[in-house]
Amino acid sequence: MDVITTAVTAGASEGGISAAYQMLKSRLSAQSPTVADAIADVEEDPGSRSRQFVLSDALASAGLAGDRYLRAAARNLIDEVERRRAAKVPAAASPDGVPDHAVMRVYFATDRELSGDRHPARLFGYARGTLRYGSCEVSIPRDHRMGELETPSLLRLEFRPDPEQHVVLLTAELLERDNYMADLKQAIAASGARSALLFIHGYRTTFEDAARRTGQLAYDLGFQGTPVFYSWPSQGKLSGYIVDEANVEWTQADLATFLGDFLHQSEAEHVYLVAHSMGNRALAKATASVIAARPELAGRIREVILAAPDIDADVFRQQLLPALAAMPHPLTLYASSSDSALRASKAIHGYARAGESGAGLVVAKGVETIDASGVDTGFIRHAYFAEQRSALSDMYYLVHKHARAAERFGLQAVDGAMGRYWTFRQ
Image (tube, rainbow, N blue to C red; front, side):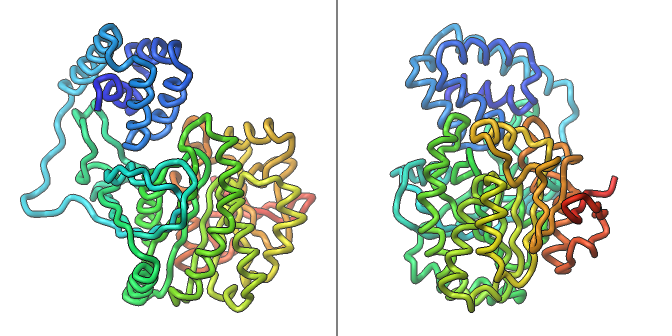
């Protein structure tokens, strides 16, 4: 990785508070909007190698990677971070022979185009491709903190992702469809729980991001079954919203194909569907399509969890909910009025999103709505479902105990004008 990308990653890992970081960021952003977008994406997840690669490529394309003044500023930032690190006490080493990380095996399906690069973080690109299958290995450090995607930080002299310290996509292996389904079926049977968790990511997410998030989510939930994710061709960047909207609509047929096969061939008795942000559009429509064509499969879907859904609220109420009425259990919807990403989406579309709370909160038959507005998770407050103990604990009891909202201790009921919904206890 070039020195400028390394320095930006280091500064972003510290929260972007350094004056040296802000100066470097300002200079870079002023010279290239593409570089500015790439920096913003690294700031959202500094541990994502795929986002770091995109920044490095953008710097090279803009002719900035070799600029001696920018390189000097980058080295100064790295030196500053190293000096701060020198004042800190190093962490104690783990005992010899004791693994300091767990490895989660995560299955995937994706209709992203193969990139031609064999690095796990760059195996798939951002263009549309054909439906492919495989499995990944994701590391979770033993001292992992619930809700965190631990990333390298130059403040700790961490120049590369380390499985002992970080959530890392270690491997990604392609499998032929029949072998994949057989392997998946065997893994589900071997788990004893005969259950699977299928995660569909949202906007601004790379393949690597989705793999790491799925591993972290399954680990934090203590999920005893088999974790799986479906990755559609999100651009993985701030400026990719319009393309992502087109691609999440395009992917619905592929997701419906995969979901139907998955429910039928995996023989999982309890399937938990979890979608985030824009991914809810694909999940809701694909699920409705599968159930309409094969109603006998609905009984295998134990829960549908819609986290911060970026869906038109009226479309959700009037079109999607009736189509999902055959579900054996209520849907669970997490919404928030603090979600700046959904506020931006509302500004673009002119209509409220189903993941917003406040006056437009979705309260309807067949849905248990949880207002998570009090949950703060940083700059955009859009990933609270996977980053806060309150939301993760609530999902834990939903998944492990099959407890409905009225039975979960961390929630309190609110009877509003539109009906009953829940908030987190303070």
